[in-house]
Image 1 (cartoon, rainbow, N blue to C red):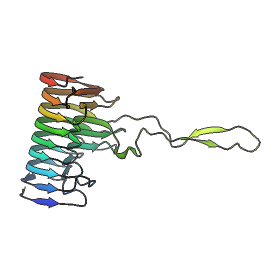
Image 2 (tube, rainbow, N blue to C red):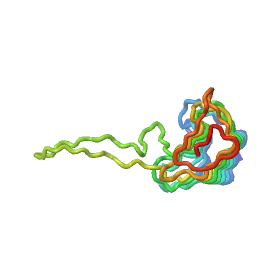
Image 3 (cartoon, rainbow, N blue to C red):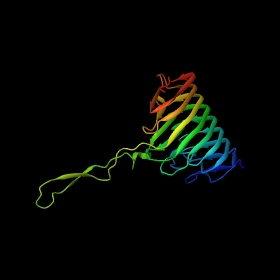
Image 4 (tube, rainbow, N blue to C red):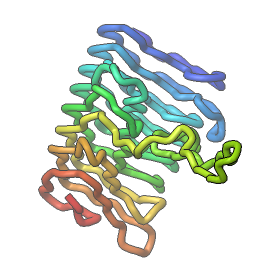
Amino acid sequence: MISGLTSMNSELYHVVIDDCEGVTLQGVRITAPGNSPNTDGIHVQMSSYVTITGAVIRTGDDCISIGPGTTNLWIEQVNCGPGHGISIGSLGKGYDEEGVENVTVKTTVFTGTENGLRIKTWGRPSEGFVKGVVFEHAVMQNVRNPIIIDQNYCPDNKGCPDQVQRLIPIPSVEAIKIRTNILCGSHSPQNSGVKISQVRYNDIYGSSASQVAVNFDCSASNPCTGIGLQDIKLTYGHSPAESSCKHADGTTSGFVVPPSCL
């Protein structure tokens, strides 16, 4: 057990739990400037039966990030902000990654964060998966993306899998006066191979800093399935908030605002 730890201004990740079982973090306080990159508060990967409770995290990146091979993770009573929210991922950067399964995130507060509850995967082939996730009892306070699945994750829009380099002309060869074009480093646009299923959102409410408060941008080749929305109320200033769905399937129940696009 790690209890009562305070970590300030780490150069990179503050706390990393890697290849562990049965670790508990309780009452952790983590602080870094909101504009400091890669200063994730707590990162968990290749670990099982980890519990994180009673944390206050203010960073320039994810408050909590969940990497490949994480199973049976319990997160409860976390205050996040500033930062990039609580994120499963990024996943799918490598082909043979292990999946993420049985994750519960409950009783959280997000204040002024870039994201709230996020799943992010690279748009490239992968054997990874996300399955059996519960997000519940979350409060959003001016959060840019309160609920988001992004299966085209590419930070800074550099070196993205579906980017195609420009055409470069080849000079004519000797007496053959023909100019030809080749595509340098080309490939067809790719979709994420990470399969996302059985993800449930329950009792999520508060304010969005952007009009699209619920955004499911899933893989065309591996659509999200089994998404559940129950008792959602997210507002956007004086205008109606919106939902956006691509390649996502699921169900809704109770009071759901903005109206579901599933």
